[in-house]
Length: 263
Image 1 (cartoon, rainbow, N blue to C red):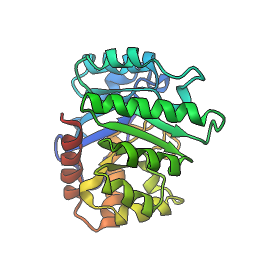
Image 2 (image 1 turned 45 degrees about the vertical axis):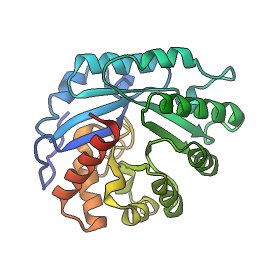
Image 3 (image 1 turned 135 degrees about the vertical axis):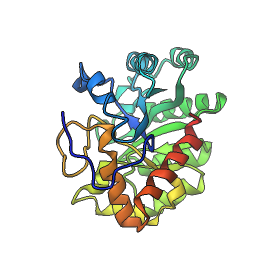
Image 4 (image 1 turned 90 degrees about the vertical axis):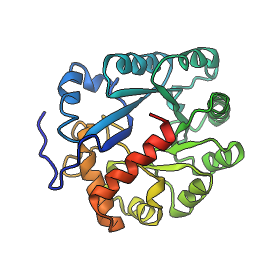
């Protein structure tokens, strides 16, 4: 699993991947190989996001095993049944060390439009739990921009809308709430023009870097297994769009991640 080093090499510990899923089966038996390359590629840390109780437990186990790993726990909208979510079990997971956020939570009307009410109730309940424990939320929003924004405006959590797919106008509203915009490999895609416009318009102090691995590897690796050490290719694209020095992209986004997640 070798990847070329970017032209402008990041400094040591300059990158925090704020959203990944290294507990996915695609990474089975690859953790040691991948994480051993983090230092060489300037990766300081990664937040692995849970999708349900069992998956969230695995993010905690990975955080215990590897110093570079931290955990977020929550119910992804695709993992919500008609019966809702087990908030008691989720709250229990918050007692574990290195749990930095509640996520990945939110709304997904792409895969399931039939249980919108259940998704909304689960989203709100998890936001309220995050506020109870003063934790940020990591928000999933797919084809549900209006409802997502309505809920965020009403409950005003701190956090990030990850893998942002909304408009410039929506991003501005998210930023007004004090939240962050998560930018990943899509910004490097040929069909990523809308996201490039969001990046151009968004202040650097509101951007976070992420992979959403194992998916959405940046160009020129689109379709391959994504990894945190590919983030420099995302950072280079942001640098090109924003006309900011690359080292400043690394510095500011790292500071943003530390400010939000309290590493």
